[in-house]
Amino acid sequence: MAASWEKIEKNKVQLQIEVDADQVALALDKAFKKVAAKINVPGFRKGKVPRGIFEAKFGVESLYQDALDIILPEAYMEAIQEHEIIPVDRPEVDVQVFAKGQALKFTATVAVKPEVELGEYKGIEVPEKTSEVTAEEIQAELERLQQRHAELTVVEEGAAENGDTVVLDFDGYVDGEAFEGGKSEKYSLELGSGSFIPGFEEQVVGLSAGDEKDIEVNFPENYHSEDLKGKAAVFKIKLHDIKRKNLPELDDEFAKDVSEFDTLDEFKQDIEKRLLDRKTKANQQEIETAVVEKAAESSSVEIPASMVETEQEQMYKDFANRLQMQGMNLEMYFQFSGQNEEALKDQMKGDAEKRVRNNLVLEAISKAENIEATEEELTAELEKMAEQYQRSLDEIRSILSANGNLDSLKSELTIKKTVEFLVENSKQVAPVA
Image 1 (tube, helix red, strand yellow):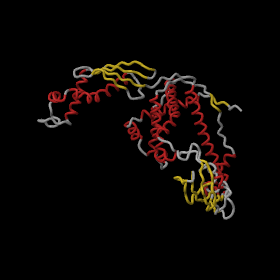
Image 2: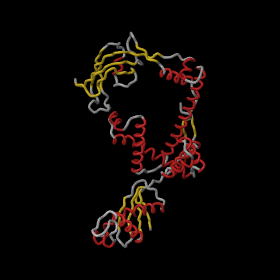
Image 3: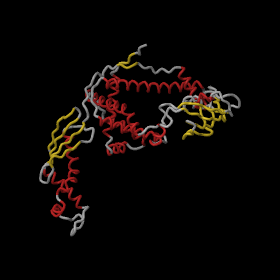
Image 4: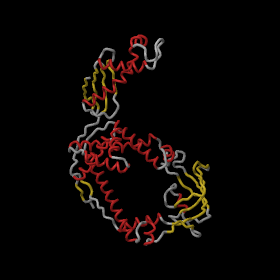
């Protein structure tokens, strides 16, 4: 086999590939055996018809498509490996010559991974971050836990306030007509949560148990239901109960009830440690994101549309998987949000393009700085996975090798090292007052 290539656009190449006549003959032989096993020819058992009789009856051309299916992928893969071409899409194949006794000649035009023109990526300035935990943050966390462990008690007398949970019936109308989903009985609603249409909860504040009222609101212009967008509505409500949070005292007993500590002071110290760890990780993530984005912004690269589309598809699948883990599916999400598959993917396009750009730039920096994950680092990561999944190291390595993910894991570790390199070579500067 002989292959050559030329760049026809910035991120597109065309390969000229020639496969010799002997390989074409072998492919035709394989195609004949495949086809002959399926057809019936009078006087012969299935699969036993002689080649000459088959070609006389059906023509050698009847084998061409099967032979091409055998030979084209093999020849194409060999050509891109020989010339170290990295395709990012399926090739457009044009067969120029294919006949019995002749060499196969074809071209394959394909989008390839684009070249990156790196800008400045050392000495990137990022805002200085502090991981100090304040007394106010510790108190806020305590109050959050206090709210979570509060008990709801029925308010016998008095009016509903923000923060109360009310139990009510509601019946909604638009233009005097009831609409789907606008009616419920004994519905529990926390006032001030913002979970209902804007203006609804505010009009419940001040009502007492047993009160009835017509609440007038307008559906938002971006409401998920096309029939209700921007429409004026009236909800007839009846308030049954008002429940108010009874907050526990923030004392040693509270600490014992919600933690493993005997005193509130010990619990506060633990909260401070956890907040410090959380803030340190968040700050590190912000710095990493900042240096990668600034390195990408200073670099130049033209991204093929196919790479963005592939990333969109992966993001879409990841989103569907996350929904499934939460007990939902895409159909339920579309019904709730008013979106469809096309709108959701379009929403993901900007992030998909940014991800592709960032990854291409990081790969280019890895190459420029000779950064690569070592075998020791790969083994260490495999050991973590083995412990996590309770499998042996050899099993994990074998599984990843079999499904082609071992190289992907090594690439991920290389990218991680490259991000660490950017952070180590960045400059943290105090934010401008």
